[in-house]
Amino acid sequence: MRVLAAMSGGVDSAVAAARAVDAGHDVVGVHLALSEAPGALRTGSRGCCSREDAGDARRAADVLGIPFYVWDFAERFKEDVIDDFVASYAAGETPNPCLRCNEKIKFAALADRAVALGFDAVATGHYAQLVDGELRRAVDADKDQSYVLAVLTAEQLSRAMFPVGDTPKPQIRAEAAERGLAVADKPDSHDICFIPSGDTRAFLGAKIGVRPGSVVDDDSGEVLAEHEGVHGFTIGQRKGLGVEGPAADGKPRYVTAIEPDTGTVRVGSAQRLQVWTIGAQRAIWTSGHAPEGPVECVAQVRAHGGTAKAIAEAAGDGLTVRLLEPLTGVARGQAVVVYQPDSGGDIVIGSGTISTTSADRPTAVATR
Image (tube, rainbow, N blue to C red; front, side, top):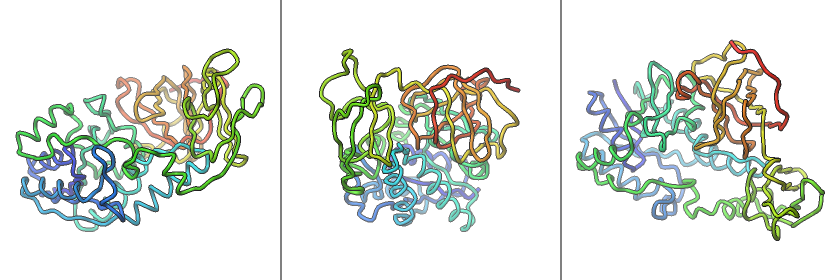
């Protein structure tokens, strides 16, 4: 097969490209230039897509003896990932930009161009597995990225390759060193790639500006503090609330609700964070079709952690997830990803963007 290897400049994508070469594929490496100012997008292990990363990717391609190109996707990345991220926070949501980048850039814009140029598949360094067309968790649970890949359609998955998903990260680094790849010890990127400072609140403040509102006690309705914008908060947040001291009972307060129209941020006890039912929009089923009726599943609401046994059911273009045990810190804008329980929770069934939550405990639902 002709394989386009997306090379970020890190160790995972370099080894993924190397394994594609070893498998006998005709491989071409490509680095995505995602920033209009690449020199400003890396600070140590923070950020990515810098000139340094492009150079690291090119040197890895040279070692592997494959052609290498840099493709400029900066405008598309700004529109589909950065602008979406800012708009989502302004609307009181908590988006996952990695998920959106996979959906809109790496497996849509990039894959579409790859197919147009005659490539059969796109290989990336994501930690996930594809087995008989099914998206599965990676062997390395700590590095598993199936959650942020669950937005991919069956067609997109049919053109994807994840060569490192069957190997723990330490072994990937050891393999890179054996292959003579200089990125073997390169630090992993952390936080949001286009915010190398790590200060998300400052980044959003510069984009959105001051939109004052109040921090309100969810029980009493008392105004506890003023703030400069709902973009500085997320559901479940405990620190940085601008509130002096704990609640009257001595227990900490958490963000329990965000109301962007009025600028109100509600805070309350941990008990108020419990969610039993999740409604999601834009459902994507990795098999290509929605399940018939309710199905048992394991639901995950954050990239790492936040899992519970549940019942999932298609609801129009979305899905409803009824949890069998409550989850906390469930925020609109994040994804809910559902996995098959009989696979040990490893096989992805589908996903949707969280739009509603309810603290009401659902009644029993018959499943097939």
